[in-house]
Length: 323
Length: 288
Image 1 (cartoon, rainbow over the protein chains, first blue to last red):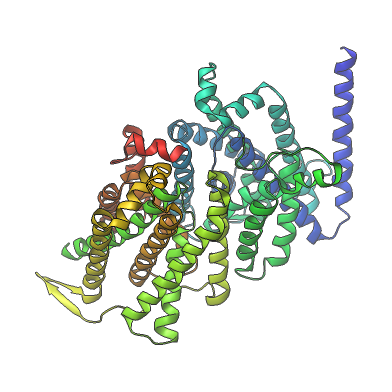
Image 2 (cartoon, one colour; image 1 turned 135 degrees about the vertical axis):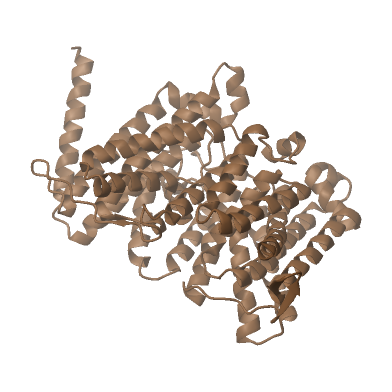
């Protein structure tokens, strides 16, 4: 193996050890803060998944549908078929990818606004259909997802065990998206986002790349949805409303869409702090989120990531609506 | 059967109101007004305040709630949407912000519980062999009158012609001396007013909670996608198709009737990607 290859492997191992240590250290936090950390990881992944398809020029208003399908698949497999949680996790993520592939081939052909509205309608129809099905627990949802067996020292009856799982999924998603952004694929996505027609005239089959982005995004969102179902122990149609699709947009927008990994992670911190303190006030959460969204769009279009230019004097970053 | 037909017509006529409001704002503003469904919900709540808390008669309460919520709509257009300079993504996100704020305000003020609206008219009428509540007939009649007025306004009045000119080409209309800013505000106001009327009439038949906005937006979007964005005649035809699935589907298929509407729309979109009445020229304009 070459020196460069060894260096990469060493860096990778170091990163894994560091992440493991940080996650173990988080285990000493009170339960409430561990809960916030888990929600932070979940919304970071969902936010990143929304952002990667935005890069390819797809503005989705229905990301919650993949959380929903992932969660329900995991719930049905574990509760009704006594399947292993880990198998259910893989099946849920794969099912989401397949559904994204089938639906994507039809609806990604639609231009701008049409895709936006149809993705919204798709999410809502899936939710209503699930809420109407008696097999899937109608409007109550499914309860009693079993706690997975512990793996070595990772015990899933504690919050810390779940923290390991979510940090693992987050690292996987962040690494994938970061590599995609930095590679040829990322540049192709940027071309497609700027102008699909122009990209096509350069010989890029943009439908293929759009479907690819959509499927990858659905995979990670579905995986998160399934893990979230297992963590909470129940799934219900009220957990996947349009509000949660909006959160998947709010998180990256608060953080700044200029950076695919850092933006959603920062935005997720802000969102979860607000969410934790507002969850008991019905309505106040929506009101504050709406207000925050408008303030960010008007005054900080580059989000939290864009703030660094104030401190570091960087040049103008990427804001939503500019390509 | 006759009962279901009456229900179908009542519901569809109100769906036409909902969808024409949405399609009007889309064609003038060039973005989807995501808050449309929540203006519908807000209208019903404002009406509830005027008619139950203050005790005004039905007609006056209706007019006042149209004025109040329509005013909010125009304010949103003038103070928020216009300042974003017509960029699509920020405008949509801004509308999502308005949506969340309206939902949050309604939940804080009125609580998350489901409630009913007072009926327009009490009593029943006998049509043929079936007994129909007077309210449904009155609701259908109101909707029909409003749709006719809107259609005549857009078709024959000078202001209506300006609206249509702005929809066709904003810059050319501006060059012809049309104040496109005023037209834009006006269209948003009219679109919101349509949502309010539909909201008061549909929630009186179904039920009202701060979360009905999303399903109303969903219905509105299904209709305009099916009919073709920007086409009022298309919205009219599509509203009757979606209304058919929501009334007959609900009574004959059962709880899965949502899939029927969605399936119909998807099927039409595969063969006609711009909807039933959408024309390529209009769609090109929306992309800008």
